[in-house]
Length: 220
View 1 (cartoon, one colour):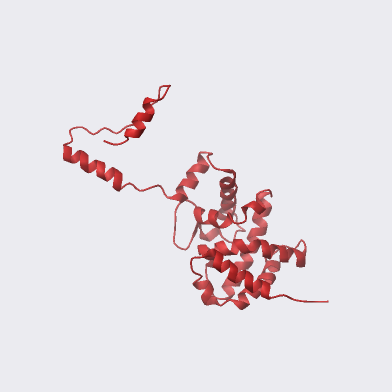
View 2 (cartoon, one colour):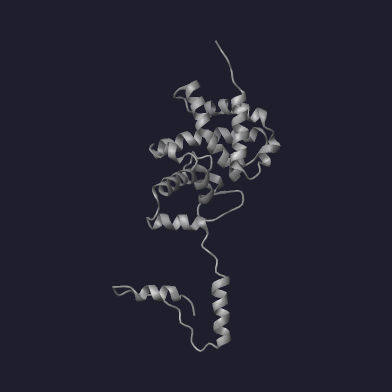
């Protein structure tokens, strides 16, 4: 009824294989056609969130997937995590960050962090995201980081904010230090913009980085 390509593929095998099959008996031609149509039109793919979970269990992840999955697990389980209450590991849930959203957002900085110890990366990023979330709350924006546009653009902004924080506070990479660097952004951009950031992470990032660059202090 279906699976002809797989049958042909198995016919080329050079070793014996156990092949699971489903067999229908006593069907009319009409029933066979109906099942064939159902099989080829109503099947739904496994959610991407679940696939990432399964690949982890199967040790079939790429280096990047493994690193970001492990980082996601820290943000989901650590008591210190500012994202702990708004993550969902294996499925999409409104108002929560799935593995797929997390991976998409954090991929922007993966090349800059993949050589670093995971626990240290978590500590610094958690401080940064805590500061960002506190600034959002000051504008009355609840759970803003669960919005994929805000989270994605926030992570794109991280290298610039990190460098400015490092320049000003050296080794003090606390949420308080990050917050001081982020403050001009939230003074320039309205709460309405954060409540409705649109769908383009790149455009919202450019909006924030512009606000950050326009706030240049000259001191002698």
